[in-house]
Image 1 (cartoon, rainbow, N blue to C red):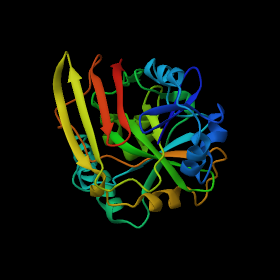
Image 2: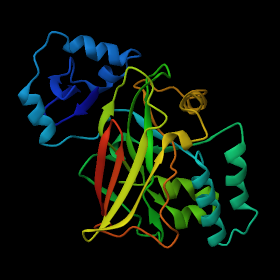
Image 3: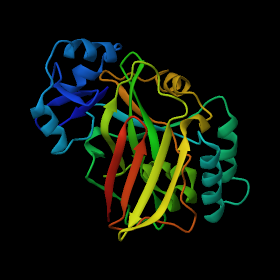
Image 4: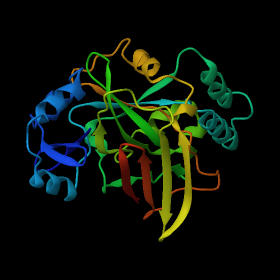
Length: 284
């Protein structure tokens, strides 16, 4: 079951049929521990709506209201190696800053950081940005969890955790600047609300188009992630409350080669089985 936020209202998609959601208050609607059953009950006996289908086809918004977006890092082996490489290339050496990423991969406590307010999140078709003071920029395609205010995972979406690797690699203390800025987070195209947790063999795919040609592509199953989803949410909710629920990006295992950096006009497509494709163009 898919939940879309549109300019005209919130829409439920089930078995390729579209229905008006029982409320247009996103924050109220999604903060429900039995969200799948609640949405299913709301459409039982209701006729599908061609109008709602048209709302979705005309364009959807980022599936977010007042929620915060957090992120986790070094959850895939490839991500750990990439973070160590960027530190070494910036002059951090084989120890020092780069060693932190090696240690956190095996540590009990995961890396968690604040990514974005809803105001800075962009949706499908909108522009993501690269920092003007960064020389090495990449998208990070990530399965993104949605947990209710009680900490229960009820949905998933595609996330783009835009990163300034030149800034991040220079010093670990610069991570907030490398990760948090206007247009640095994208979510969408919908909130996937399954009856059961997402299949571990679900594939995440990344395609970067430049001037009509493929500049990079790759895919990875979420089963390659070392951390469990419930583990990450458990640490996040230990000392934080989220009255409207919270999004958590779960890290990436898809990293473009070190000689690649995003350019203005690039098109980033992030696809996850069962959810759809989040597409954004890169702005300067």
